[in-house]
Length: 253
Image 1 (tube, one colour):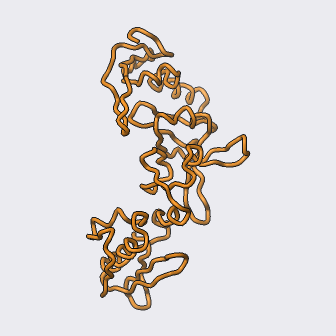
Image 2 (spheres, one colour; image 1 turned 60 degrees about the horizontal axis):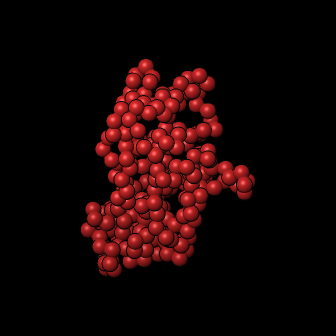
Image 3 (cartoon, one colour; image 1 turned 180 degrees about the vertical axis):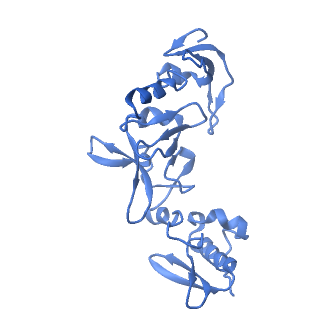
């Protein structure tokens, strides 16, 4: 590989291997770009060979300058890390994917779609064959899966787990109109207390009213642990409030 040229990149020498999250080693090469900055970067060998990377990024920037703005029908990608990063063409929002999936997703134009009713955003592209919008998770074969970290723009394999529709719905982010910072906890003007609720199988369960906001939060989190287990939408708060996933005790004021 040393001395070979790929686009504007000339291979200088072999660099340290890049180790993916699944333990696979990618052979990397130190390359110098022929642009005015003569940028030197470490790039995976297979990205050079398949033509995915042809410069230090200068070709994309030059194209943007030439056109006056970025082509609204293309995505910009960074393939030089442990995983791939892309940007939606309409909102410039970052999304993540495994490098091994790049050859599949690069054939689509990805954009951020926001449901005006639920205010929930997701990553989508137009599928010419079906003439319908398709999500990246569906394209990658994760139709009946859930994003563990609740980020629909993180489509790395390690972020997916099998889930039913109801389990997927539970693992949702905080609604934009929430004022307490915690799902299921709100301020009750009549009693001047914090009220805690949870919805299970489309039925609302009243958990109590509390003078102390923390108690209202704990009541909600205990209920999530009891009813939702691993799919509790606010499991990231469990450790902070001392909640255990198998603890079914309630909290009383």
